[in-house]
Length: 206
Image 1 (cartoon, one colour):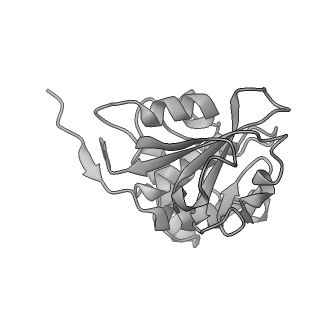
Image 2: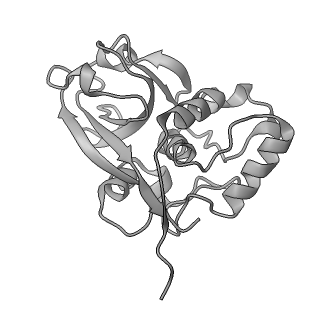
């Protein structure tokens, strides 16, 4: 019988620090990068998973060379990752890591090991209250031009606030660092619907 996974807290502060350090990927020197970046324009879920991974303690804060070397090794060793959900320096990661719908399904499914999240809000921008959104949450949106009625973009919340203009997010594709959520809420024709996932403590093999 395999040992029970150890339980780790979800730390939005660490996730936010990672998000802010790596949101503008091409401004990060190549020797400080940890994960693969999909330059074809499909990197949002990959980056969101990285932030979630960091919040579970996968990432040791810092972008100095010794810390980057340690973090690269932790990625290779699948620290705070699972056999179904992991990223890589050489490709975008597993489908549950790098695809929007698959990430949502994996986060919200009951499982013995791996990141665990709850759907806390879903609807239009008029029906979802900004005050429900917290730092460290994952926001996913329907993108009309990409796939109508299907969720197609992921954002990581780095600051909560009483209005969409006060809430800040980081994301890839296109890369944004601490952008106000109004960057999307002001365009309901392009992003007609959103859902919010809140992560919580979870078990991991290591």
